[in-house]
Image (cartoon, rainbow, N blue to C red; front, top):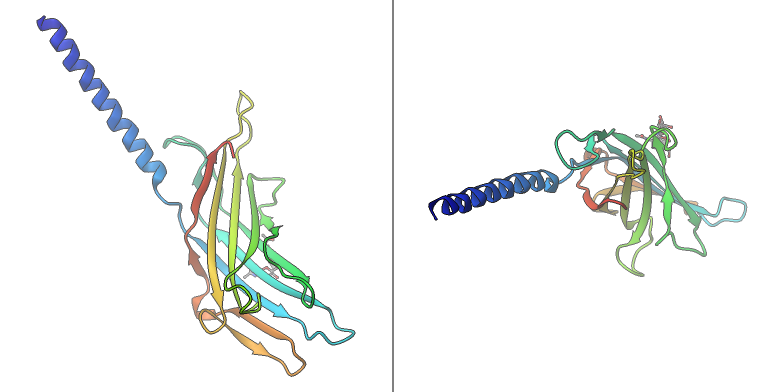
Amino acid sequence: MRLSKLAVALTSLFVFAGAVAIRQQSDGELEPPAPWQVTKLSTFSPSGRPGSSPLARILANVTNPSAIPAGPGASSPSFAPSEANCTVEWAWADAQPYGAVHECTTAPPAEASSSKWTVEILESDPGAYAPTEKLDVKFTLTLTSSSDRDGEAYSKVLVATQHFEVGDNMRGTCGGSGVCSWGLNEELTPLSIQPTIACEGTC
Ligand SMILES: *[C@@H]1O[C@H](CO)[C@@H](O)[C@H](O)[C@H]1NC(C)=O
Ligand SMILES: *[C@@H]1O[C@H](CO)[C@@H](O)[C@H](O)[C@H]1NC(C)=O
């Protein structure tokens, strides 16, 4: 009788210790990823005059300056920092840039590393503003580890969306010809944005 009571006590002690260990590990995983930096954001809209380019453009450069753990646990390898130059172009007079995912130029190059950046322009205030003057920019960083011995790759998808608006965090000018150029205010550059983990494991 005595012995089995002791056994029960010991068992629950181990269960308790195990629960603490699991909680500590998931606490570490739940820590938000380190901020990214938008090092440039600019937009351009054309004049629409015959003979000039009909394309509007949004340029965005983003950097993840921190290593990101590739898996759970402190001993896991990590994904290296990376940066990207992103360009979105569309026919100003007859299209919208919204809802399309564009691959960015990533450094280190996508073939050599596990990092891939994309950008998507989201409509911020439907119908009311030009996409070059008021917009939400969604950056997605997809990290993929090389397959392990079992052929399993480990992925992590991080996402951050930032609002940009002329008169708020953007300024610029329109020329007499009708072209307009706007950009993230210099004193706000680089702009820190907070990513969240959208998926991890097999994404
Ligand atoms: C972005 O463009 C700048 C200037 O052209 C270049 O120095 C940098 O390496 C580029 N970065 C990427 C990720 O392509
Ligand atoms: C941003 O990327 C563009 C190319 O898309 C490049 O010309 C420019 O130099 C880059 N700027 C910074 C600050 O990285």
